[in-house]
Structures are given as structure tokens and as C-alpha cells.
Amino acid sequence: MKSFPLICLFVCLLCAPAGLAADEALLEESFTTELSPDWFWGLGTWAVKDGILRGFESGERRHGPVKMRKFPFKDATLTCAFRLERGATFAGIIFNGSQERGHLVHLVMAGDTVRILAHPKKGETLELLKEPNTLSRGEWHEVKITFAGSTFTAVVDGRTYEVTHDCIAEEKLTFGLGGDSGGPEGEKAGALEFRSLKIVAPTQR
Image (cartoon, rainbow, N blue to C red):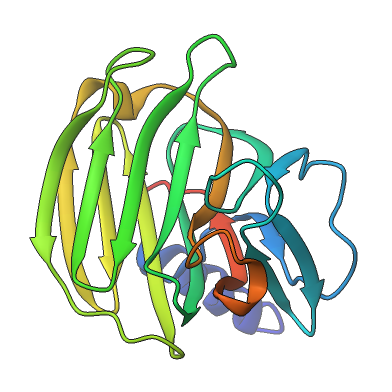
């Protein structure tokens, strides 16, 4: 009789729904300390402070700020929050293959539209989706990106966008955070901010 509680516990564990299992965290960036060497390249000026990664255009090259990180995966879910400051017009998250392969897929979240761009081969860009959207400046917005084979699903502030293309299923080796911060005048023109970055593996059902 003393073993009865243990038997009940064992049976309860066997009967527990599979959906209760949490996804495995592969990457978490709190942005409370200096960036690791895995953040290997960028354009513009970037800094971390108080849990926020902040970037703005700077230097002679006229290109919006972008910060790249090494992190190989195929199927996974990325979540983070972003904010457009002052003259910033859009935030983007781009996923790349090898250096020779280049870009794979790019999510662009602007003040008036959401776009998803695929890159079937190096140097080629295909617009898979363009839909009206409203993103206010100065407020935090939530984004969730899920890769499942050739399907790319983005949820921006609770609104879902989904596309399919073969190149989406390729291995992602690096990803970048960036966009347009408002122009070459630097931080006074505007800035992009990101926080609470996390990547989790899909739960096996």
C-alpha cells in the first residue's frame, strides 16, 4: 500500500497532455550586459542598456542600422519586442544562409505596412506579402516569427501573416536586427530599439 502514491503519480505523468510540455529555449538575450562575440557585424551605432539593444544610422555609409548575430537553426520560433523612435520608419528582422548564399527571408515592419521578402537565390528578391498595417512610434510592439519547413509565420501585435516558399526551409546561419532609423543625421533623427529576444525550438508532438 505504501507504493500506491508513487503508482498514482506515474499514471498521472503518463496521462498528462503533451501540450503542457514547454518549448526548449535555444537562445535568450536580455541585453543587460555587453554583447557576446556572436554579434559579429553591424552597420550604424549599437549599444545595450537597461535591457534594450538600441541602434541608429551613423558613419559615411548611407544605410540603416543593422546588427548581425550567428545562430544556426532550421525550424524554431523567435520572439522579441521593438520600438520605432522619432523619425524611424521601419524595423526589420532578416535571416541568412552562408556568406555565399546570402539572404533567405526578411520581415519588414513599417509604420503603414508589413512585408515579407524571400530570396530564392543570391541577389534575387521576391515579395511574398505586403499588407497594410499601423505601427505607432514610441511604443513597444510584439513580434513572433515561426519557421516550420517552408512556411514562415509572423505575428505582429496579434495580427498573423503567413507565407510559403522553398527557400524558407533552408538552414538559417545568422540573423539580423535593424531597419531605418530616420536618416544620416544619426541619433537625433531617430533610433530602433529591441528587447526580450528569445528563440525556442518547436515542441515535438
